[in-house]
Image (tube, rainbow, N blue to C red):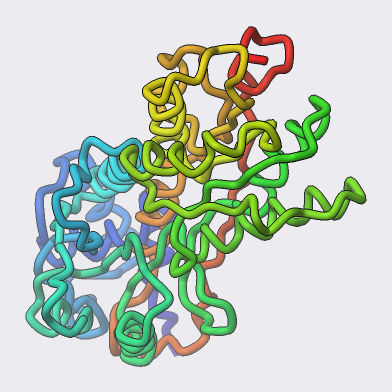
Length: 350
């Protein structure tokens, strides 16, 4: 029996991904001439011709990597550090693989149908941002998994579902923030979290609680506040926190926008610098270094999350490929605390 070369072998010989091999031999999307030449040369050397490939794989036709974006009315998504960094990472890797990005915004008034994008050949793979723990979302994701389409979630996870996911360790991230505040001698630490419909909010809450448990200090449920990740919700939280500054020494916020809004709101309420609580944000956005005092924050590698998700999802086999043994994508990157003046007892704010 004559051994037939595989797409993986062609990819390894050419030094490219399997997705790139597929695109070259199916003439899908823009590709560099040098890349084409390497793939075609490798295919010829291994006796793997475009005609045999056409019979065995590649239903991909659009040349698009879809990115499902959340429905957030009046939100300036592309100015948000979280989205801009993730999209930059996705776009960088997609370009290397010869794919274009197709941005798809959820319609709040229509049921979610991610599989329809594949049936209409609008996308060859998709990445989902801002997934919530809701019945419609779960049904749409389960259908993607059942039909075998290449997809991946970023910065969200669903326990027990076995979805393809690329995430950061938000339990550890928030635990680092609260542990740092405890080490500064603060014990009455409030937490300004995001909506619990998001897994990363629940993870951060778990990290907050773990830090107190490790320190042997009971957490106070009355010090838990919720915003929606916007600066305005941080300003609103200042209204609730300001009257309690006699007992609130520090605040951990679930993102920098809320932390900066909290700083702004407290100042607008006339809170002087010597009565400001210590504050730690989350994300380590560019704005964190521009606040006064500079904002301590938990750095999340959003660019890398996007880059890894794009690379992984483009390596997944196409729907109907018959590969039932594919390994589930499960990546979790570490977070890192960046300490600045806003959280230090001697930083001029206490």
